[in-house]
Amino acid sequence: MSEPEEIATARNARWVLPDEPGVEAHGLAAALEQPLWFAQVLVSRGIETPADARRFLIPDMAALHDPMLLGGMKEAVARVLQAVAKREPILIYGDYDVDGTTATVLLKTAIDRITPTGGPSLVRYHIPHRIREGYGIQSSVLAEAATQGIRLVISVDTGIRAFAAAEESKRLGLDLIVTDHHLPDGMQGIPEAIAVINPNQPGCDYPYKELCGAAVAFKLAHALLHAATKPAADPNAYRAVDFLALWDKLLPSLLKLVAIATIADSVPLTGENRVIVALGLRALRDQRQSGLRALFDLAGVVSDEERGPSATDIAFRVAPRINAAGRMDVAADVVRMFLARTPEEGAALAAKLHQLNEDRRNVEASVLATLETQMEALRSDESALGTMGCLVLDGEGWHRGVIGILASRVVERMRRPALVIAHEDGQAHGSGRSVSGFHLLDAITAAHTETEPLLFDRFGGHAHAVGFSLPSDRVPLLRERLSTYSLGRLSSAMLQERIAIDAELPSAELNPDLIKKLHLLEPFGQGNREPLFLSRDCQVEEAPKTLKERHIKLRIRISPESTVDCLGWSREIVWPEKIAEMGIASGSRVDVVYRVRENRHPQFGGVEMELCDLRLTPVSTTN
Figure 1 (cartoon, rainbow, N blue to C red):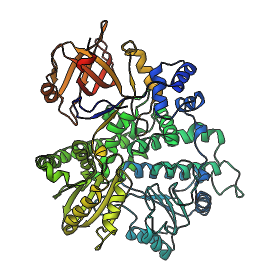
Figure 2 (figure 1 turned 180 degrees about the vertical axis):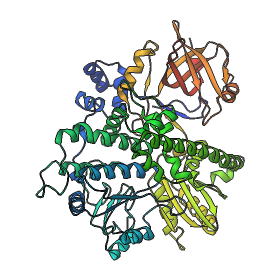
Figure 3 (figure 1 turned 45 degrees about the horizontal axis):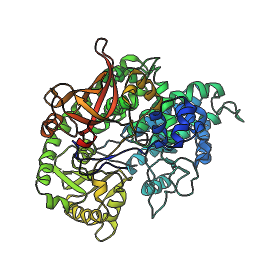
Figure 4 (figure 1 turned 90 degrees about the vertical axis):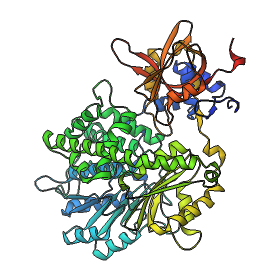
């Protein structure tokens, strides 16, 4: 059920309260010997039996699906093994984001592992330059590869719509294997290649469809390594792999990279993805690769035998530094960092990525200031805003490497789908992000094809994120068509922020043991978000304190016996202003929605609340 709409919250959001605990939650709590709130969180994620709960809470390698269930895998493995046996050079064609670069590294690592020693690596790689080449397989790169003796090209995190590149490969005498996770073209199907590996392609019965690009490449790597555990007809064809080493060392090592990519690509952390990330984060406790270890140090990420990095660490500290190379410079540096042979080389490349991330943040802040002006103008004209539906914001000379991040910022602030477009020499390059329930790829596809003329030179993506390019003079037409499309499909429910609360937490549960129980539910991310708790009728003990001019600290009494610090970080909402506007002061009684945090300070550490939303407690519930 939801809270009455007339009760105002700080975010003007709709609180969605959990159902009363049912038979499933009570039974699960008893079977697992866990509190009722713990069982409520599991049930809210569709986990209702003790057996399902144990699989969720204790992921292991046995839960990974057989890679041979993927369509095209048999043909791909045979062709790669043939190339290794004949010592044919292989080109891995990657992409410039975390997903594409880590996919390149892990597939190269797997092929190198089964290649006989005594000669140079058969595997070369190409990571496109975001600005000069753009997304996708370029014919010029294929032509150069052919002149260098390449006969097999394997795409990772790209290629599912590369029809022209597939034709060009055939003309050049190149065999093409496509590994990708993006949605195929609904009209043209899939490109013609030796093999296409994509769980989302028509006719593929693979049981889990939400893999990122690196995970699809990992499936090929897994299949190759497993094939090499079997005796070859020719003992010199490839290096054998010990079966126990495959499961104990090789696959966990590769899962470190897949976990980073899965988190960075924001695919759901459900099903097999949850297993991949849980096992990968566990493997990252033992961080031996010099470049990644140096990057962790620069990002302030703690990784040791007791506890590895969290999904949040990867998402907000590690992934941005890896992505910065492709956004600001040359993403091939990421591959070189992961493959670095010496600590000095790895540390130098990690330092470069760290600095590029600082540059990215500065550029992003500059463009965001301009976007804030545009958004403020939209907010001041509510009637115009109401007719727009999906927002299209554009500017001349904006750095194309940051427009995807900025599109996310606009969605956070405006609570509606948005495209951010950078104009350069008469060409417009755009990136878009959406809100839950509004399929953005369907929207721009309709804008492109429903009437003449066609809009885009290229476009692609999925429900929540898209990328595209088109001539600058067509942007007004794009804005018009998207407005027409979205207004009929973008409901008020999609535009209003919803805060789904997992459980009302008894005050006695807010203690250090709660942190340990929350760790059991990790990793958190899309599809398995971090739980939100509600505490009602709490008293503000002291006057709210402003921290660093933007953030807020409240001292909350949750019971006669205990108080807890509640911290509000001003990302989407400026908390000091909002708290003052609501008249919250010492003695105010409030209902608080929060995430649980652990302060590890040796003197005043303990459990804290991270403020998500709050409201003044309705008078009728106050004694």
